[in-house]
Amino acid sequence: MAEDLWKKEYDFAVAVARKAGAVIREAGEKEIKVCTKSSTVDLVTKTDERVEKIIIGSLKEEFGEGTHCFIGEESVAKGEPCILTDKPTWIIDPVDGTTNFVHGFPFVAVSIAFAVNKELEFGVVYSCLEDKMYKARRGKGAFCDDDRITVSDVEEIKKSIIISEHGTDRSPEKVKKIFSTMQKILCIPVHGLRGSGTAATNMCLVACGAVEAFFEIGIHCWDIAAGAVIVKEAGGILLDVDGMSIRSVNCVAINQALCFGETPLLKNRLCLTIQGGPFDLMSRRMVSANNKKIADRIIKEIEIFPAERDDAPIQKK
Ligand SMILES: O=P(O)(O)O[C@H]1[C@H](O)[C@@H](O)[C@H](O)[C@H](O)[C@@H]1O
Ligand SMILES: [Mg+2]
Image (tube, rainbow, N blue to C red; front, side, top):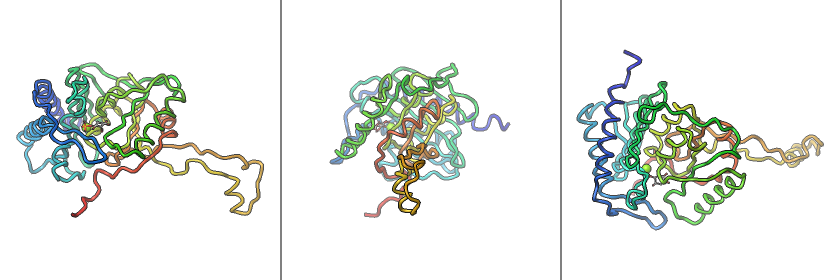
């Protein structure tokens, strides 16, 4: 029946996420296997790889290798393609919050999403140390365990808590922009800034109304795909951080350039409303929020820096 389309896959994803979470909870193997290029600190452990193998192995066994595609964080790290096609595609982060996992900081999530015709059909985020199963199917609402969840109804940015992360890139110019953005948002002022260390969990915190928004530049599709469905189904909004390039325009300069002179009406600096662009899973830039007003207010403060798309062609060596 049409309304139960992908139900089997969804139920299976919930079960696999629970199984993967148990493996993470019980894992003794927290040793860092890969850490860093010179300007990044991006931890990977054997558990990340093991859990991804378990998840993809189970999915292949259940649904067959030929018809379904897989984008997994560790597989992509080993050179598998990261391209979303129209085929049914699983998007997997086996351990979201690997740094937390290594240090015993209590937010670690398994994130599994499923897309068909490039549209996300469902998302499952299992916050495995808290034992909370966040899940949502397109058009069917969002849940934490058996409870329906909805975003917060706060509309005033000054009454909000905002989450962001500093990511893995440690190049000074990027870190400067990230902290400058955080400073500007903090000083709006908002009630607080937070960060759990996992994008997937951060999005679930938006979805259940604990915070008003989460934004980050530099995340990957596997960090946010499942959370995107959950936020949307909880009544929230997803945007790219950069939809409109006109940030502020000096009308005097424009008028002079067009030989209109300086009319009093256009004498002042005109700040156009800055809006986010449409959410793009592969763009590595995202704002998730309870509503558009909060999202747009945050986007106004974000200092954008380049992040190569997840689906960018792989450079030939
Ligand atoms: O690499 P994992 O899967 O742990 O995920 C990332 C987080 O999800 C980001 O929010 C966070 O900012 C970091 O980029 C972190 O690496
Ligand atoms: Mg991740």
